[in-house]
Image (cartoon, rainbow, N blue to C red; front, side, top):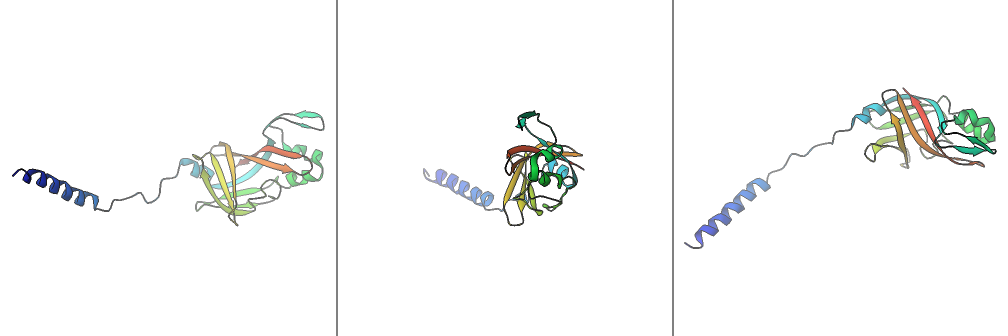
Length: 170
C-alpha cells in the first residue's frame, strides 16, 4: 500500500504528459508584417538626393540637406551619375520584389535595377537584395503614406564617400 499511492501519482502524471505533450500544436503559419510594409509597397518617384551631413566642397561649406543634384555640375564627370537619377522610379511589390527604372550605377551599385526587398532591424532598414542575391541595406530616415527617405552612402569617384538621403514620393 505504501508504494501504491506514489505509483498511481507517477502513472497519472505520465499519462497526462503523454496526452498533452503528444498533440500537435498549431503554430502561426507566417508572422504578421508591420504596417510599414504597406507604406513601402507601391511606386515611388525620386524627388531629390540630399546631403545627410554638412561637407566642404572646393573650400566652401555646404550644409546638410543641400541637393546633390544641384551640386552635380561642381562634381565634374561624377556629377552626371547623379543627374541621370533625377527621374528614377522605384516600385516595391506585395510579393517582395522591386524594380528601378532609371540610373542606379552610382547611387545603388550593389542593388542594380531589380531584386527583392524586405524590412529588417525592427523595420528600420529597407533591405534590398540584388538579382544575384547581394544585400544592400538602407536605413529608413522617414516614411509615411507619401514620403520615403532612405540613407545612402555613395562613393563619388575622385571626390569622396558621402552620406546622402534619397528622397522618394508616391
